Image (cartoon, rainbow, N blue to C red; front, side, top):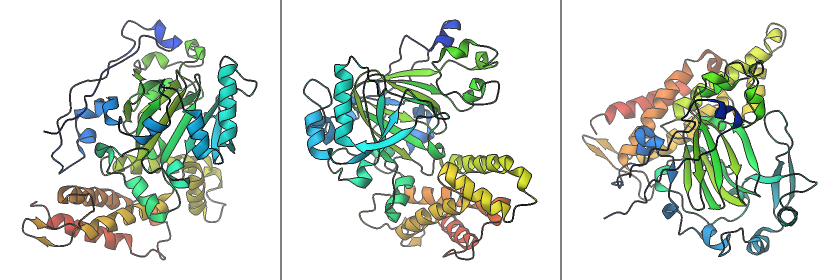
Length: 422
């Protein structure tokens, strides 16, 4: 019988100052029933069913990870000696949590050994330093170094098109290491491309504030801007935040060492390290939130178009410049989104070797069963059908594409039609 670690339920008793002025019930518990063992035919149900509310998983999922054995002392603290020995000369990105730059923190790059030296001094100084509170964030360890044996990708989160795409190009990824002292934190945000994400505490303790999609609108200030820090006393100022009383209290989660948090697509959140903490985080997209990503990209382009609308009639190639600006701000534009769809689609089409009545063969070692392969193809076809009729995409120069988007869509729809009986 397959043993599945239990989903645990935990919330905290304290809230941001502005929430303490609300009525009782300032936090909502995490749903906590036990997931059923999977049959191996699909890994999609955590995102398709009410189980998406079960966003905190016990440390039993991660107890065999190499990072939990090697990066942590017997006392549960970061093992600075081991980390220095293995990564001391690596250059890492570090954010200053005490400085606001727009709605984020400015970053610098430093040697990992210099960051560990700072961290030790920060602890010795009673968690204070003239340098401020520095947080190692968004370190692409898997991309830049060997991460073999450090973790095992959770099976429920293994359908990961975003990293599959970037691994194919061999230029980037969305797998990150975070390391920071007590007091380090990540400002209020929603994840890139409205992706899913998961985060595992290798050691330490985090406090999360979650806001369901749409609730962030009630947190906007009088100028329409989203908050930098939802725990700030400024939320008590009704002139600065005139509609915050309409926001439901956040879901608050305490994450302990070894535990895994799943962040659903589009949920804004803010995270605080309550102890010296190391975490491994992944962002990913698949067929279950692909439409969310496409909707988000359309919104991003609309925002860019509004910002430079005054030059619409005077700037040559205005629409092309909007795409360039969008890519600079969001990390992707419509052309690259199409290439993302194309790469994943062609990889799935390779898995469909023979289509007959009730029969689909698959390539050995793919890791994908026939049902999931067909599901993926169907979701790509649905979104691509919207892409090809989008007026802004129709302005993209597709003459150099390896395949016309319309032809790829037709191929996908033919496969979907041929496999409907499966």
